[in-house]
Length: 469
Ligand code: AMP
Ligand code: ZN
Image 1 (spheres, rainbow, N blue to C red):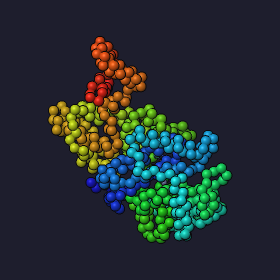
Image 2: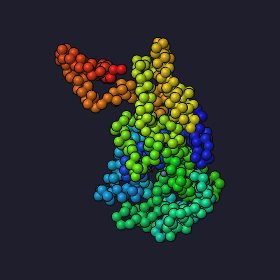
Image 3: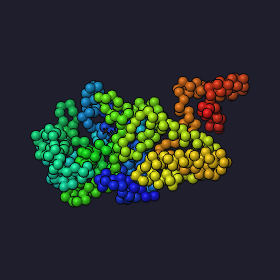
Image 4: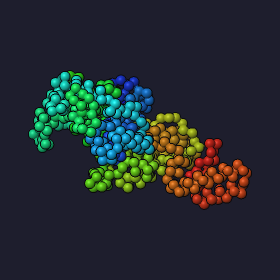
Protein backbone atom coordinates (compact mmCIF):
# COMPACT_ATOMS: atom_id res chain seq x y z
CA UNK A 1 0.00 0.00 0.00
CA UNK A 2 1.33 3.43 -0.92
CA UNK A 3 0.12 5.96 1.60
CA UNK A 4 0.00 9.57 0.49
CA UNK A 5 -0.66 12.33 2.99
CA UNK A 6 -1.02 16.04 2.45
CA UNK A 7 1.86 17.90 4.03
CA UNK A 8 1.12 21.40 5.30
CA UNK A 9 4.74 22.54 5.00
CA UNK A 10 5.28 21.44 1.41
CA UNK A 11 1.66 22.25 0.50
CA UNK A 12 1.17 19.04 -1.45
CA UNK A 13 0.34 15.38 -1.07
CA UNK A 14 3.48 13.35 -0.48
CA UNK A 15 4.16 9.66 -0.30
CA UNK A 16 4.59 8.81 3.35
CA UNK A 17 7.85 7.02 4.12
CA UNK A 18 8.64 6.62 7.83
CA UNK A 19 12.16 7.19 9.05
CA UNK A 20 12.13 3.74 10.64
CA UNK A 21 9.29 1.40 9.63
CA UNK A 22 9.72 -0.43 12.92
CA UNK A 23 9.13 2.73 14.92
CA UNK A 24 6.72 5.12 13.23
CA UNK A 25 6.22 8.18 15.43
CA UNK A 26 3.22 10.47 15.56
CA UNK A 27 2.28 13.37 17.83
CA UNK A 28 -1.04 15.17 18.01
CA UNK A 29 -1.66 18.22 20.18
CA UNK A 30 -4.19 17.14 22.78
CA UNK A 31 -6.68 18.90 25.02
CA UNK A 32 -6.17 21.68 27.53
CA UNK A 33 -8.12 20.23 30.42
CA UNK A 34 -10.05 23.21 31.81
CA UNK A 35 -13.52 22.36 30.49
CA UNK A 36 -15.45 19.76 28.48
CA UNK A 37 -14.30 19.38 24.88
CA UNK A 38 -16.62 20.68 22.17
CA UNK A 39 -17.47 18.70 19.05
CA UNK A 40 -14.81 20.57 17.01
CA UNK A 41 -12.14 19.41 19.47
CA UNK A 42 -13.18 15.83 18.71
CA UNK A 43 -12.25 16.08 15.04
CA UNK A 44 -8.44 15.81 15.43
CA UNK A 45 -8.43 12.79 17.80
CA UNK A 46 -10.91 10.92 15.57
CA UNK A 47 -9.14 11.75 12.29
CA UNK A 48 -5.72 10.84 13.68
CA UNK A 49 -7.13 7.69 15.24
CA UNK A 50 -8.02 6.55 11.72
CA UNK A 51 -4.48 7.33 10.61
CA UNK A 52 -3.04 5.40 13.55
CA UNK A 53 -5.28 2.41 12.79
CA UNK A 54 -4.10 2.49 9.19
CA UNK A 55 -0.43 2.81 10.16
CA UNK A 56 -0.74 -0.08 12.63
CA UNK A 57 -2.24 -2.25 9.92
CA UNK A 58 0.56 -1.35 7.53
CA UNK A 59 3.61 -1.38 9.83
CA UNK A 60 2.40 -3.64 12.66
CA UNK A 61 0.62 -2.80 15.89
CA UNK A 62 3.86 -2.56 17.88
CA UNK A 63 5.68 -0.46 15.30
CA UNK A 64 3.66 2.73 15.76
CA UNK A 65 4.23 5.07 18.69
CA UNK A 66 1.46 7.60 19.06
CA UNK A 67 1.66 10.44 21.59
CA UNK A 68 -1.20 12.83 22.37
CA UNK A 69 -0.40 15.24 25.16
CA UNK A 70 -2.51 16.66 27.95
CA UNK A 71 -1.97 20.36 28.62
CA UNK A 72 -2.43 20.64 32.36
CA UNK A 73 -0.67 23.96 32.87
CA UNK A 74 -2.61 26.91 31.47
CA UNK A 75 -4.06 30.23 32.55
CA UNK A 76 -7.60 29.04 31.74
CA UNK A 77 -7.11 26.13 34.15
CA UNK A 78 -5.91 28.50 36.86
CA UNK A 79 -8.90 30.78 36.26
CA UNK A 80 -11.37 27.88 36.55
CA UNK A 81 -9.77 26.58 39.75
CA UNK A 82 -9.91 30.05 41.31
CA UNK A 83 -13.53 30.56 40.25
CA UNK A 84 -14.60 27.16 41.63
CA UNK A 85 -12.40 27.36 44.69
CA UNK A 86 -11.01 23.89 43.90
CA UNK A 87 -7.37 22.82 43.63
CA UNK A 88 -5.90 22.95 40.11
CA UNK A 89 -5.14 19.22 40.14
CA UNK A 90 -8.80 18.45 40.76
CA UNK A 91 -9.94 20.55 37.80
CA UNK A 92 -7.43 18.95 35.43
CA UNK A 93 -8.15 15.40 36.68
CA UNK A 94 -11.90 15.89 36.31
CA UNK A 95 -11.78 17.17 32.73
CA UNK A 96 -9.12 14.72 31.63
CA UNK A 97 -11.27 11.84 32.92
CA UNK A 98 -14.32 13.24 31.08
CA UNK A 99 -12.24 13.60 27.90
CA UNK A 100 -11.00 10.02 28.06
CA UNK A 101 -14.50 8.77 28.70
CA UNK A 102 -15.82 10.69 25.68
CA UNK A 103 -12.94 9.41 23.53
CA UNK A 104 -13.75 5.83 24.52
CA UNK A 105 -17.36 6.34 23.44
CA UNK A 106 -16.06 7.52 20.05
CA UNK A 107 -13.95 4.32 19.71
CA UNK A 108 -10.79 6.42 19.82
CA UNK A 109 -8.01 4.06 20.91
CA UNK A 110 -5.90 5.49 23.72
CA UNK A 111 -2.55 6.89 22.55
CA UNK A 112 0.58 4.94 23.49
CA UNK A 113 1.89 7.93 25.39
CA UNK A 114 -0.11 10.74 26.99
CA UNK A 115 2.52 13.13 28.32
CA UNK A 116 1.40 15.72 30.86
CA UNK A 117 3.17 19.05 31.04
CA UNK A 118 3.47 18.82 34.83
CA UNK A 119 5.48 15.58 34.44
CA UNK A 120 7.96 17.05 31.96
CA UNK A 121 9.04 20.27 33.59
CA UNK A 122 12.73 19.25 33.68
CA UNK A 123 12.76 18.57 29.94
CA UNK A 124 11.03 21.90 29.28
CA UNK A 125 13.52 23.85 31.40
CA UNK A 126 16.40 21.96 29.74
CA UNK A 127 15.17 22.77 26.23
CA UNK A 128 14.77 26.46 27.07
CA UNK A 129 18.38 26.38 28.36
CA UNK A 130 19.56 24.87 25.06
CA UNK A 131 17.74 27.51 23.01
CA UNK A 132 19.36 30.25 25.11
CA UNK A 133 22.79 28.66 24.66
CA UNK A 134 22.32 28.65 20.92
CA UNK A 135 21.64 32.39 21.02
CA UNK A 136 18.03 32.03 19.84
CA UNK A 137 16.38 33.40 22.98
CA UNK A 138 16.95 36.13 25.55
CA UNK A 139 15.98 36.88 29.14
CA UNK A 140 13.99 40.05 29.87
CA UNK A 141 12.23 41.02 33.08
CA UNK A 142 11.97 37.47 34.38
CA UNK A 143 10.73 36.15 31.03
CA UNK A 144 12.60 34.04 28.53
CA UNK A 145 11.61 34.99 25.00
CA UNK A 146 12.33 33.25 21.73
CA UNK A 147 14.02 35.61 19.28
CA UNK A 148 12.18 34.96 16.01
CA UNK A 149 14.78 36.85 13.98
CA UNK A 150 17.35 34.19 14.94
CA UNK A 151 15.61 31.46 12.94
CA UNK A 152 15.97 31.85 9.20
CA UNK A 153 13.00 29.72 8.26
CA UNK A 154 10.54 31.28 10.68
CA UNK A 155 7.19 31.47 8.88
CA UNK A 156 7.93 28.58 6.53
CA UNK A 157 5.15 26.29 7.81
CA UNK A 158 2.42 28.92 7.81
CA UNK A 159 3.67 30.68 4.69
CA UNK A 160 4.19 33.94 6.53
CA UNK A 161 7.03 36.31 5.98
CA UNK A 162 8.51 37.79 9.10
CA UNK A 163 9.06 41.26 7.59
CA UNK A 164 5.41 41.45 6.49
CA UNK A 165 4.33 40.21 9.87
CA UNK A 166 6.33 42.91 11.63
CA UNK A 167 5.01 45.63 9.31
CA UNK A 168 1.44 44.47 9.90
CA UNK A 169 1.74 43.94 13.63
CA UNK A 170 -0.99 45.71 15.50
CA UNK A 171 -0.72 43.71 18.67
CA UNK A 172 0.15 45.59 21.77
CA UNK A 173 3.74 44.68 22.31
CA UNK A 174 5.16 43.99 25.74
CA UNK A 175 7.96 46.55 26.28
CA UNK A 176 10.52 43.85 27.05
CA UNK A 177 10.16 42.19 23.61
CA UNK A 178 12.79 42.93 20.98
CA UNK A 179 10.39 41.97 18.21
CA UNK A 180 6.59 41.91 18.42
CA UNK A 181 6.54 38.24 17.34
CA UNK A 182 9.01 37.02 19.91
CA UNK A 183 7.14 34.55 22.06
CA UNK A 184 7.32 33.38 25.63
CA UNK A 185 9.30 30.29 26.57
CA UNK A 186 9.15 30.94 30.31
CA UNK A 187 7.28 33.50 32.38
CA UNK A 188 7.25 34.41 36.05
CA UNK A 189 4.28 33.33 38.16
CA UNK A 190 2.45 35.68 40.46
CA UNK A 191 1.60 34.72 44.02
CA UNK A 192 -0.91 31.90 44.08
CA UNK A 193 -0.18 30.82 40.50
CA UNK A 194 1.48 27.45 40.00
CA UNK A 195 5.22 27.73 39.57
CA UNK A 196 8.28 25.60 39.09
CA UNK A 197 11.92 26.47 39.77
CA UNK A 198 14.16 27.46 36.86
CA UNK A 199 17.47 29.25 36.34
CA UNK A 200 15.40 32.35 35.38
CA UNK A 201 13.29 32.36 38.50
CA UNK A 202 10.19 30.52 39.62
CA UNK A 203 7.54 30.47 36.93
CA UNK A 204 5.87 28.39 34.27
CA UNK A 205 6.42 27.55 30.61
CA UNK A 206 4.76 29.05 27.55
CA UNK A 207 2.39 26.78 25.63
CA UNK A 208 4.56 26.10 22.57
CA UNK A 209 7.65 24.89 24.43
CA UNK A 210 5.58 22.25 26.22
CA UNK A 211 4.95 20.35 23.01
CA UNK A 212 8.45 20.62 21.55
CA UNK A 213 10.05 19.47 24.81
CA UNK A 214 7.59 16.60 25.33
CA UNK A 215 7.98 15.46 21.72
CA UNK A 216 11.73 15.31 22.06
CA UNK A 217 11.61 13.55 25.40
CA UNK A 218 8.91 11.00 24.63
CA UNK A 219 9.38 10.28 20.92
CA UNK A 220 12.84 11.60 19.97
CA UNK A 221 13.60 13.83 16.97
CA UNK A 222 12.67 13.96 14.20
CA UNK A 223 9.19 12.52 14.48
CA UNK A 224 7.41 11.22 11.39
CA UNK A 225 4.07 13.01 11.64
CA UNK A 226 2.81 15.96 13.65
CA UNK A 227 -0.89 16.72 13.59
CA UNK A 228 -3.57 19.04 14.91
CA UNK A 229 -6.32 21.42 13.84
CA UNK A 230 -5.63 24.04 11.16
CA UNK A 231 -5.73 26.83 13.76
CA UNK A 232 -2.55 25.42 15.29
CA UNK A 233 -0.41 26.04 12.18
CA UNK A 234 0.28 29.55 13.38
CA UNK A 235 1.60 30.35 15.86
CA UNK A 236 1.69 27.06 17.79
CA UNK A 237 3.32 24.73 15.27
CA UNK A 238 5.43 27.43 13.65
CA UNK A 239 6.86 28.13 17.09
CA UNK A 240 7.29 24.45 17.91
CA UNK A 241 9.48 24.03 14.83
CA UNK A 242 11.54 27.12 15.67
CA UNK A 243 12.18 25.79 19.19
CA UNK A 244 12.84 22.19 18.22
CA UNK A 245 15.25 23.20 15.46
CA UNK A 246 17.07 25.97 17.30
CA UNK A 247 17.63 23.95 20.47
CA UNK A 248 19.97 21.82 18.40
CA UNK A 249 21.87 24.52 16.55
CA UNK A 250 20.17 24.12 13.17
CA UNK A 251 18.88 27.69 13.00
CA UNK A 252 20.57 28.44 9.69
CA UNK A 253 20.25 25.15 7.84
CA UNK A 254 17.90 25.44 4.85
CA UNK A 255 16.18 22.14 5.57
CA UNK A 256 16.32 22.57 9.35
CA UNK A 257 12.59 21.96 9.78
CA UNK A 258 13.15 18.34 8.70
CA UNK A 259 15.03 17.85 11.97
CA UNK A 260 11.80 18.32 13.92
CA UNK A 261 8.87 16.67 12.14
CA UNK A 262 9.04 15.12 8.70
CA UNK A 263 5.37 15.53 7.95
CA UNK A 264 2.69 18.02 9.06
CA UNK A 265 -1.05 17.33 8.92
CA UNK A 266 -3.91 19.65 9.84
CA UNK A 267 -7.64 19.08 9.92
CA UNK A 268 -10.16 21.67 8.74
CA UNK A 269 -12.62 23.35 11.05
CA UNK A 270 -16.05 22.25 12.12
CA UNK A 271 -18.97 24.69 12.10
CA UNK A 272 -22.40 24.23 13.65
CA UNK A 273 -25.38 25.01 11.40
CA UNK A 274 -22.97 26.91 9.14
CA UNK A 275 -21.75 29.12 11.96
CA UNK A 276 -18.49 29.23 13.84
CA UNK A 277 -18.98 27.75 17.28
CA UNK A 278 -18.72 30.42 19.92
CA UNK A 279 -19.85 31.04 23.44
CA UNK A 280 -21.30 34.42 22.47
CA UNK A 281 -23.49 32.88 19.72
CA UNK A 282 -24.44 30.15 22.20
CA UNK A 283 -23.94 27.30 19.72
CA UNK A 284 -21.13 25.42 21.42
CA UNK A 285 -21.97 21.70 21.36
CA UNK A 286 -20.21 19.72 24.02
CA UNK A 287 -18.91 16.33 23.01
CA UNK A 288 -19.83 15.06 26.45
CA UNK A 289 -23.53 15.82 25.83
CA UNK A 290 -23.52 14.47 22.27
CA UNK A 291 -22.11 11.07 23.22
CA UNK A 292 -24.73 10.73 25.96
CA UNK A 293 -27.53 11.52 23.53
CA UNK A 294 -26.32 9.55 20.50
CA UNK A 295 -24.42 6.34 19.84
CA UNK A 296 -20.70 7.15 19.69
CA UNK A 297 -20.40 5.55 16.25
CA UNK A 298 -22.96 7.99 14.83
CA UNK A 299 -20.90 10.93 16.11
CA UNK A 300 -17.72 9.31 14.79
CA UNK A 301 -19.23 8.57 11.38
CA UNK A 302 -20.46 12.16 11.12
CA UNK A 303 -16.97 13.47 12.00
CA UNK A 304 -15.43 11.33 9.27
CA UNK A 305 -18.04 12.00 6.62
CA UNK A 306 -16.14 14.92 5.10
CA UNK A 307 -12.51 14.73 4.06
CA UNK A 308 -10.43 15.81 7.07
CA UNK A 309 -8.94 18.85 5.34
CA UNK A 310 -12.33 20.19 4.32
CA UNK A 311 -14.60 22.18 6.58
CA UNK A 312 -17.36 20.09 8.16
CA UNK A 313 -20.76 21.49 9.01
CA UNK A 314 -22.46 19.84 11.97
CA UNK A 315 -26.26 19.78 11.70
CA UNK A 316 -29.25 17.53 12.27
CA UNK A 317 -29.22 16.24 8.67
CA UNK A 318 -25.64 15.09 9.07
CA UNK A 319 -26.56 13.13 12.19
CA UNK A 320 -29.70 11.60 10.64
CA UNK A 321 -27.77 10.59 7.55
CA UNK A 322 -24.93 9.12 9.60
CA UNK A 323 -27.38 7.01 11.61
CA UNK A 324 -29.05 5.81 8.40
CA UNK A 325 -25.72 4.93 6.82
CA UNK A 326 -24.66 2.88 9.81
CA UNK A 327 -28.09 1.19 9.95
CA UNK A 328 -27.59 0.14 6.34
CA UNK A 329 -24.15 -1.39 7.03
CA UNK A 330 -25.24 -3.07 10.25
CA UNK A 331 -28.38 -4.25 8.47
CA UNK A 332 -26.27 -6.10 5.91
CA UNK A 333 -24.13 -7.60 8.68
CA UNK A 334 -27.26 -8.70 10.53
CA UNK A 335 -28.57 -10.40 7.45
CA UNK A 336 -25.24 -12.20 7.12
CA UNK A 337 -25.02 -12.98 10.85
CA UNK A 338 -24.87 -16.73 10.34
CA UNK A 339 -22.16 -16.56 7.67
CA UNK A 340 -18.55 -16.68 8.89
CA UNK A 341 -16.29 -13.93 7.52
CA UNK A 342 -13.71 -15.17 5.01
CA UNK A 343 -10.47 -13.24 5.54
CA UNK A 344 -9.46 -10.16 7.50
CA UNK A 345 -8.52 -7.62 4.85
CA UNK A 346 -10.41 -4.51 3.76
CA UNK A 347 -11.34 -4.42 0.08
CA UNK A 348 -8.67 -3.11 -2.34
CA UNK A 349 -11.03 -0.22 -3.18
CA UNK A 350 -11.30 0.74 0.49
CA UNK A 351 -7.52 0.69 0.90
CA UNK A 352 -7.06 2.73 -2.22
CA UNK A 353 -9.42 5.44 -0.96
CA UNK A 354 -8.18 5.58 2.62
CA UNK A 355 -4.50 5.59 1.63
CA UNK A 356 -5.17 8.55 -0.64
CA UNK A 357 -4.72 11.20 2.06
CA UNK A 358 -7.37 9.54 4.25
CA UNK A 359 -10.22 9.93 1.80
CA UNK A 360 -12.89 8.88 4.28
CA UNK A 361 -15.94 9.81 2.11
CA UNK A 362 -14.50 7.65 -0.68
CA UNK A 363 -13.76 4.86 1.78
CA UNK A 364 -17.34 4.99 3.09
CA UNK A 365 -18.67 4.64 -0.46
CA UNK A 366 -16.71 1.39 -0.85
CA UNK A 367 -18.36 0.12 2.33
CA UNK A 368 -21.84 0.78 0.90
CA UNK A 369 -20.82 -1.21 -2.16
CA UNK A 370 -19.85 -4.11 0.13
CA UNK A 371 -23.17 -3.96 1.97
CA UNK A 372 -25.00 -4.14 -1.39
CA UNK A 373 -22.82 -7.10 -2.33
CA UNK A 374 -23.78 -8.86 0.91
CA UNK A 375 -27.49 -8.29 0.22
CA UNK A 376 -27.11 -9.49 -3.38
CA UNK A 377 -25.13 -12.59 -2.47
CA UNK A 378 -27.49 -13.46 0.41
CA UNK A 379 -30.44 -13.32 -1.99
CA UNK A 380 -28.52 -15.42 -4.52
CA UNK A 381 -27.47 -17.88 -1.79
CA UNK A 382 -23.81 -17.36 -2.68
CA UNK A 383 -22.44 -17.82 0.82
CA UNK A 384 -18.80 -17.64 -0.22
CA UNK A 385 -19.35 -14.20 -1.73
CA UNK A 386 -21.20 -13.18 1.45
CA UNK A 387 -18.30 -14.34 3.62
CA UNK A 388 -15.75 -12.39 1.57
CA UNK A 389 -17.79 -9.18 1.45
CA UNK A 390 -18.59 -9.46 5.16
CA UNK A 391 -14.91 -9.87 6.05
CA UNK A 392 -13.97 -6.89 3.88
CA UNK A 393 -16.69 -4.74 5.38
CA UNK A 394 -15.71 -5.57 8.94
CA UNK A 395 -11.99 -5.00 8.27
CA UNK A 396 -12.82 -1.65 6.62
CA UNK A 397 -14.91 -0.75 9.65
CA UNK A 398 -12.01 -1.62 11.93
CA UNK A 399 -9.87 1.04 10.20
CA UNK A 400 -12.56 3.71 10.34
CA UNK A 401 -13.27 2.64 13.94
CA UNK A 402 -16.91 1.75 13.27
CA UNK A 403 -19.00 -1.45 13.05
CA UNK A 404 -17.34 -2.52 16.29
CA UNK A 405 -20.62 -3.63 17.89
CA UNK A 406 -22.62 -6.68 16.91
CA UNK A 407 -25.65 -5.90 14.71
CA UNK A 408 -27.91 -6.93 17.60
CA UNK A 409 -26.21 -4.52 19.98
CA UNK A 410 -26.42 -1.81 17.36
CA UNK A 411 -30.12 -2.16 16.70
CA UNK A 412 -30.83 -2.41 20.41
CA UNK A 413 -28.96 0.83 21.04
CA UNK A 414 -31.66 2.86 19.29
CA UNK A 415 -34.17 1.66 21.84
CA UNK A 416 -35.26 4.10 24.50
CA UNK A 417 -34.18 3.40 28.04
CA UNK A 418 -37.65 2.66 29.46
CA UNK A 419 -38.21 -0.08 26.87
CA UNK A 420 -34.75 -1.49 27.44
CA UNK A 421 -35.35 -1.74 31.19
CA UNK A 422 -38.69 -3.47 30.61
CA UNK A 423 -37.26 -5.96 28.10
CA UNK A 424 -34.26 -6.77 30.30
CA UNK A 425 -36.62 -7.35 33.27
CA UNK A 426 -38.85 -9.65 31.19
CA UNK A 427 -35.84 -11.63 30.01
CA UNK A 428 -34.68 -12.08 33.60
CA UNK A 429 -38.18 -13.28 34.59
CA UNK A 430 -38.12 -15.63 31.61
CA UNK A 431 -34.90 -17.23 32.87
CA UNK A 432 -36.49 -17.76 36.29
CA UNK A 433 -39.73 -19.14 34.83
CA UNK A 434 -37.87 -21.57 32.61
CA UNK A 435 -35.64 -22.74 35.43
CA UNK A 436 -38.79 -23.44 37.49
CA UNK A 437 -40.37 -25.15 34.45
CA UNK A 438 -43.28 -22.71 34.79
CA UNK A 439 -44.25 -22.89 31.10
CA UNK A 440 -47.43 -20.86 31.49
CA UNK A 441 -45.42 -17.97 32.89
CA UNK A 442 -42.79 -18.39 30.16
CA UNK A 443 -45.54 -18.18 27.52
CA UNK A 444 -47.00 -15.07 29.12
CA UNK A 445 -43.58 -13.42 29.00
CA UNK A 446 -43.09 -14.43 25.37
CA UNK A 447 -46.46 -12.85 24.46
CA UNK A 448 -45.54 -9.69 26.30
CA UNK A 449 -42.18 -9.45 24.43
CA UNK A 450 -44.04 -10.05 21.18
CA UNK A 451 -46.38 -7.22 21.98
CA UNK A 452 -43.37 -5.00 22.53
CA UNK A 453 -42.14 -5.88 19.02
CA UNK A 454 -39.10 -7.66 20.42
CA UNK A 455 -37.43 -10.72 18.90
CA UNK A 456 -35.47 -12.86 21.34
CA UNK A 457 -32.53 -14.92 20.15
CA UNK A 458 -31.36 -17.70 22.44
CA UNK A 459 -27.73 -18.74 22.31
CA UNK A 460 -25.41 -20.70 24.61
CA UNK A 461 -24.14 -17.39 26.05
CA UNK A 462 -27.67 -16.28 27.02
CA UNK A 463 -30.48 -14.48 25.21
CA UNK A 464 -30.01 -11.37 23.09
CA UNK A 465 -32.80 -9.36 21.55
CA UNK A 466 -33.67 -6.78 18.95
CA UNK A 467 -36.68 -4.95 17.66
CA UNK A 468 -38.55 -6.54 14.77
CA UNK A 469 -38.28 -5.00 11.34
P1 AMP B 1 -7.88 23.57 21.96
O1 AMP B 1 -8.38 22.87 23.20
O2 AMP B 1 -8.61 24.82 21.61
O3 AMP B 1 -6.38 23.73 21.98
O4 AMP B 1 -8.19 22.59 20.74
C1 AMP B 1 -7.87 21.23 20.73
C2 AMP B 1 -7.81 20.74 19.31
O5 AMP B 1 -9.08 20.93 18.67
C3 AMP B 1 -6.80 21.48 18.45
O6 AMP B 1 -6.14 20.54 17.59
C4 AMP B 1 -7.65 22.44 17.63
O7 AMP B 1 -7.04 22.75 16.41
C5 AMP B 1 -8.90 21.62 17.43
N1 AMP B 1 -10.10 22.42 17.18
C6 AMP B 1 -10.57 23.44 17.95
N2 AMP B 1 -11.73 23.93 17.44
C7 AMP B 1 -12.01 23.21 16.32
C8 AMP B 1 -13.08 23.22 15.35
N3 AMP B 1 -14.11 24.07 15.44
N4 AMP B 1 -13.02 22.34 14.33
C9 AMP B 1 -12.00 21.45 14.23
N5 AMP B 1 -10.97 21.38 15.10
C10 AMP B 1 -10.96 22.24 16.15
ZN1 ZN C 1 1.10 21.25 20.63
